[in-house]
Each structure stands twice: as structure tokens, then as C-alpha cells.
Length: 435
Image (cartoon, rainbow, N blue to C red; front, side):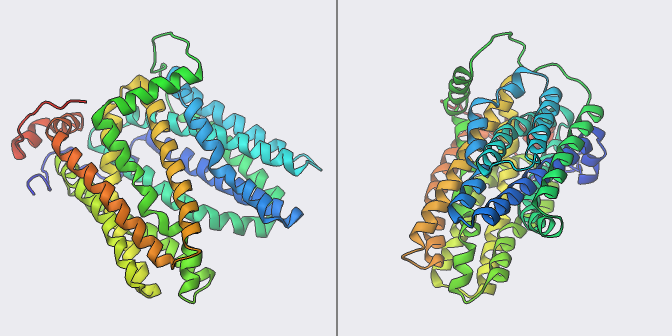
């Protein structure tokens, strides 16, 4: 396609250009520390609960802290990232989590109290995440912003997978209580980095209005669902609930193939590796408007590829299928960028949190349903069904996005600093989009 390779200075933006921005380096470091701390606390407390009680139910309740409280925080607290200076929000969130985790170190604390404290820690996380995502757009712009999105998403993938494994290793080496102490230290370090490395910026929302959390939630929901482009972009993001399902049932999938924990780990890794391989080409060699044009077809492909598991392939072939499907998920970088560009700055934190909350709910429900269905049908069939169903939804979203692309695509390209070159290389017919 024309525009797949650009010659402008903006098009030549690289990961080195992104990390050359001191404030982005600080944000990235805080992300690594916060995600690492979150995973470490979750693993440590889950293992601690199981070690004390030998109850799978209580251990599962502890592990659910990674999902349920996050949704509450995303829905009702994330507007704080717009109403107050975002650097301040991040520092306060880190300080609060540090104190909550430190409180877990008190001797002879009951398990109920430990779980409540962990839930409180997770409830605060989306506030930090919303402020971080919103402020990244203030720190970098143009093509460097897209590269920053790629870095943030890749880091999150790596930390979620590696963090759980490393968390288990740390607990095994130093014990759960020491691991919680390390977790508290990561939040302290993150807060210090943000406090000293980011410059102060005023709150994005300068209206001065005081709304309760429910009003903010309603207004944020109207913004995201009332705009057809934002709604489509968000739903494209939510497709992850279908194509990330293999990671949720990796253990029974591997068991059905005669494998154990190592095989399950390889399957999980294969569901993440494809995007890491494809991301450099997609971000550096494909132009902004071309990325938006490919977004719909790629969303369809990432689901369609999974249908091949209906043939009950071997472990190696299954890993290849998951890796290929994951390569197409780089469309999420374009979707994320376009979503943030279209949301007003003063509502950016709330909008991101709503989109993320929906994704968390979808993934949680998808994993639960897949696990239940896998009790009666082979896990490979479950993955194929999820891929087929996701492909159907993706086709509808791709068609909807194609109809509005001329307007939205030009708008996004303009904000990436390439309006002149993009519209010259890739002429489009302007149409009016309703919704």
C-alpha cells in the first residue's frame, strides 16, 4: 500500500527516539516497578493464603484481587486522573499502595485483613494506570507517541507473563513476607521517580465542577458509547476477550496433549510472542493511515487463525497457531492510539479506564466460560469456537470502521503530524459520519 513506508522525519521515529525523552523513560520505569509490584503482591499473598489454609477457594478469592477490585477502581475512581494534576495522582497512588502493602507486614495479621488490603491495593491501580496513559500523550507526540504505545503495551505483556513466574521464584527464595516488603519498595521507588522526573502540569479538567463518582461514570460512558468512532475502537480492543482465551485454558489444553506445566508455559508464551516480532515492522514501516486501514482486517485475522485448532493440532503446531494469531494483535497499537487521540484531554483518564474495565470484565468472563465449556469438549475446540465467534464480531466492526475511516483516519493522521504527506500519498474521499 502507498504510505506503508514514509520518508518524513516523523515516519522515521524509532524506539530510541521515544527513550530519548527523559519523561517517558521515567514513566516507563514507573510502569515496570508498579506492574512488577502488583504481580509480586498478588502471587505472594495467594501463595501465603494457600499455605496457611490449603484452601483452593480462599486462594482463588485472593487471586481474584487481580480483577474484581480493578474494575471498581476503573469505573468509579479513574476520573481523578482528569480532575487533579496527573503527576500528583500517580505519586499519591504509589504512596497509598506502598502504605497498604507495608501494613500487610504486621505480625499475626488475619487472612481476611490481608485479602482486604490486597483488594484495596488493586482498586487504586487503575487510577495510576489512567493517569499514566493520559500523561504519556502529553510527554510525546506525533509518531513518537505511537512508538510509546507500542513500548507500553509490550512492557505490559512481558511483565504480566514474566511477573507471575518471577513472583513465584521470589516467594520461593525469600518467602511471602519478604516479597511483600519488596513490593512496598517498588511502589516507593516508582513514586520517587515520577515525583522528581516528571514536570508538573495542571489538571486536564479545568471546569471546576465537582461531580460524584457515579456522575463521572455516566458522563464517561456517554462520551465513549455516544461517539461511533470511539465505540468501534473500544470494541476492537475488547476483541482480546476472544483471542487471548488460549492463555486462560493453557493448562487443560496442554494436559489434553499429554503435557504438563512446562507445556502450558510454552503455550502461554506463544500467545504473546507474535506481537513482539511483528511490532517493529508495524510501527516503523507502516504509515499512520495504512495502519488504520489494516486495523479491521487484522482484527479479523487474529481471531480466524485460532479456528485452525479445531483440527486438534500437536503442541508445536498449536504454539505456531497461537504465535501467528498474536502477530495480528498489533492492530491494537493503532486502535489505542486513535482512541486516545479522539478523546478530549480532560476526559482521557476516565475514557481509558472505562475501556480497560470492559476488557478486564470480558476476559474474566471469557476465561470462566471457556473453563466451563472445556469440561465437556476438548480445549482445542473451545479455542476454535472462540476464534470463530470473535471473527464474526470482528467482521462487523471492520465493516463499521471502514465506513468511517476517511474522516477518522485523516483526523488521526493529522495529529500524528503527517496530514500533508498522508493525504497526498493516500487520497481519500471525505464523507460525513453520523453517530
